[in-house]
Structures are given as structure tokens and as C-alpha cells.
Image (tube, rainbow, N blue to C red; front, side):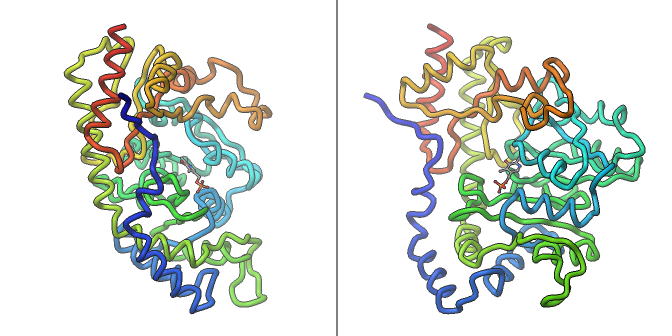
Length: 373
Ligand SMILES: *Cc1c(COP(=O)(O)O)cnc(C)c1O
């Protein structure tokens, strides 16, 4: 008998909400306002309140939200932006797309975030910003990063694509630095029915520029103050996001509950930490977009679990400094050994809120079998 454990179940997210989503879609059809408009404005107002951020703008994706932030700050040729090589590719490709250069700094040993203690050694006269990534839904070391950005008068930007509702004593991730962004890609904690994102800032002047850049740099119709883009959110995406947003708190609590179950079970198993390590316990702040363990036999473990109907994933199998698209930066293996080690060891276990406690137990007992065998 095999109890399948899927990695994610998007149908489950939508099932109970479909009548409300249909109703919201009917509202958009009737309005014939399909791009930006009242539905997007209503979502922005609800998210601004929920995130306690004065300015949030709905846009076409998390990637485009980052582009808006970099363009609005005037970051471009000759500028350097510091970030982590252990993240989704768009964190760094956006830097290149505005003409600036990414400068990678390795991640913490045993952690997944940029190592703040290594940042100051790469800051120079061209450095304009640090992009922190709240990877897996866990806040990066925000105090250390803020301190450095203030001391060197550079911007702290936050890639909060995976960390909606992850709170810190300085506020929600994405709302702390000069600017931040969230992704509503369908598999994220709050997912649209397609691509969508949010760009966030506390600076009212920057918000005005961002708003223009989102819409072809227009200050009014056919008057273009900046070179912008088409980075607008569709009303249908806003409509579905407004319905799902009402569930986000509950879904996040469920993710934390499942994470806590994993933590407890793994602590009881007591597998040799040289071979297998669960993530650090950070339930108050972590929103568990992913629950990521480290294993020195990661690929064998993944196959073993797959054979037992348990789906897992790897975020990310190749660090950015070794990606062909960044070859011109001239990096080589061992430049960022912690990021490279993480790429070999990380395994994301199922943590979707649709899962039952029995399914989590099933994952843990299969992992126990692997290490016993
Ligand atoms: C998903 C993601 C993005 C990109 O968001 P899109 O909405 O897919 O463009 C950026 N950074 C990180 C860390 C992500 O996980």
C-alpha cells in the first residue's frame, strides 16, 4: 500500500474557492477593465494593509517587479549590485538586464542566505545596492544587512518572492529595505492563475517613479517621462489573488504546523547530522515556502523517495556563478564553496498546506528507512 505524497496540489487550493473566483471573474468581465483598474487597486489596498507597507504596486511578475525597482532607482551601466549565487536566476539576471553587474557573495556555512560577514569586502565605489533573498520563506539576516547598507549608504533591496507574510521585528519581509518584491507565480505561497507580482517601497517619491515605469514611463497618457515597460498586472489575476489572499493566513499556519511535525519527527530519529540535517527551527518568522533538508546522499535519497511515491524538488541544483548565462563574470568552481555545497545537498520535502499529518509521517518514515537501510 502506498500513500502518494505530491509536492504541490494547486487543484486543492482552488477547489473550495472556485465559486468565489468565478464570481470575481464575472465582475471583471462586466467591468471590461482587464489591465490594472479597480480590481488591481483593490488588491493593492488589501496587500498594503496586510503587509503594513504604504506603497505596493501590482505588476506582471516577480521578475518584472525587480526590474521596476532597479529601473526606478536608476541602477544601470557602471553600477554593481551585491547578491547571493544561491537563488532563482532572475534575482541576478535583472541586474544584468538594467546594464549593471552582479557581484556574488557566498552563503552562510550551514545556512541558505547571503553571508553578511563577507559583504563589506566586496563593497566599492560602484556598489549601489545589496539584494537580500528571503530564500524558502525564511528571512535573511536583516539586522546585519540593514546595518551594512546604512553604513555604506547603499540600498538594501529584498527579494521576497518566496516569503510573503514572513515577519521580522523590523516588519514584513519585502517592506524593510528601500524596495522589495513578491512573486505570485502559481506555485508560490500566494499564487495567481498565471504570472503576477508586487513591488513594494516605503519611499513615496520612489513609488511615483515605479508607478510610471510599470506603465511605459508615462506620467499621463502619451506623455512619457521615463523609459519604462509594460509591467502591468491583469485584472483577472488581481481578482483571483484577492480571493486567495483571504486564505493565506490559514495556509501559512498549516505550513508551519507541518514544518513543526517534520522538526519533531526528525529530532526523534536522530540521524547522523554529518549525513542528514533538517532546517533550523524558525517557526515564528519562517513561512515555509519550502522545507529544505540537507543530505550528503541527496540524489540517492531523492530516488529512494520517488520510488515510494514521494515527490521532492531541488532548489537549486546549480549556483548562479556557474550558470552559462553569467559566464562573462568569469567565475569557476570553488569560488563560492558554500553555495556549491548547498546545491549538491539540498532537498525540498513536500510542505504544501493540502498535505495531511499522515503524509508527513510517511515522508519521515521513508527517510528513516533510507538511513537504516
Ligand atoms: C519565483 C521567484 C522569482 C521570480 O518571480 P516570477 O514571478 O516567477 O517572475 C524571483 N526570485 C525568487 C527567489 C523566486 O523564487
